[in-house]
Length: 459
Image 1: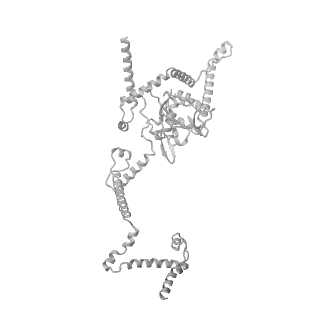
Image 2: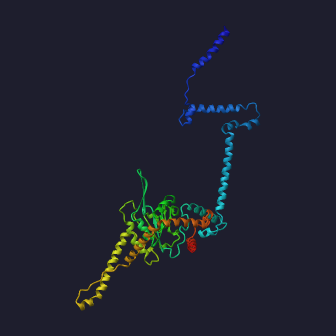
Image 3: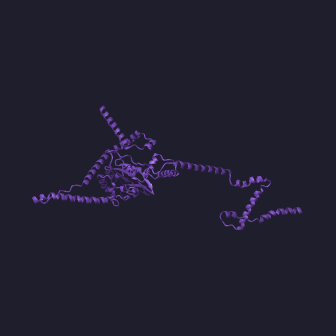
């Protein structure tokens, strides 16, 4: 009976334990504490006691070992649970990387603080060479500044080739903005991007090409504006050069067109633009125009021709004083007003001069003096001849336009073959100079004429 009773009690104990066992929540005090929730202090103390108990149990595992072994093994179990071998390797690699990075930074700083060569010394004469730490730091600072300025400065110091020799060259250079001056682009959901050409643009370019070296200077990048510029002058008869965003200066969030890099005398340069930021460095060289927003009835571009023609035909050594006198005005309207005053004075002087010369004849013959008609002003003669030249050139283009395009393609191909341009030569020597191009063209033309003469002799 005793054995049976003991067996029955042993069988009942697990059942009683299962009854006493209460369901536990997944949100334990430890989880709540880690999540930032407040935990009762008594429970927190119990948790800390449990941790201490675990630590004590870990130390009790050292029972049976010597004191030396305990010191050697102390903390190894905890470390092995926190860091694996891969973590240790990554830590070592990161340490090597940081040491190498620090060494590269120190070496780069020493290299950047070396003495200036001749070109750098010419560019920065105020910075001295030497072993002084202050001079070395100044050279380092200057080189770092030049590196970042590379992205804000024009791509070349001289953006245009040397001027063409006489009689091919023009005495003055006319720099024209592109966007909102010559063209206007807009986007709509129906048609996408569309670009409109300003009314009178073809006449404007063709007429003024007789007096100016015309340069188109766009604020957009070459990849987006090159084809647009080529479409404005397909025969390459009016536009001499084209510059783009790569040739501008970027400063204080503004795109600036610095004409001091054009390789031209600033006293002979006129810049027409609709963006005040574009000519902010040289405002005395600028003719400010309001932006054109696509109005098909606009005539401001054509009305600007008389002023630009008058400036080009005057014997002036510096255009800046003339342009400065028109600042703050609508240039086409202001010039028309001044020309009207000059024309009125011209007519009055003419009448007075001839009225006095005819007084004696009228007194003798008793007839009313007749004043001859007022002749044209000198500027009228210039305008008349300019119109004739424009019409003659347009007629020539209509008759020989296709031939001109074909010859231009052949000429470009011959020049490239003659120069044998490579990337290394293009970077070190640059593009061919106008004199070299003219010399090659003359030589090719002479060879062509000689070949034609030989063919005639054979016939």
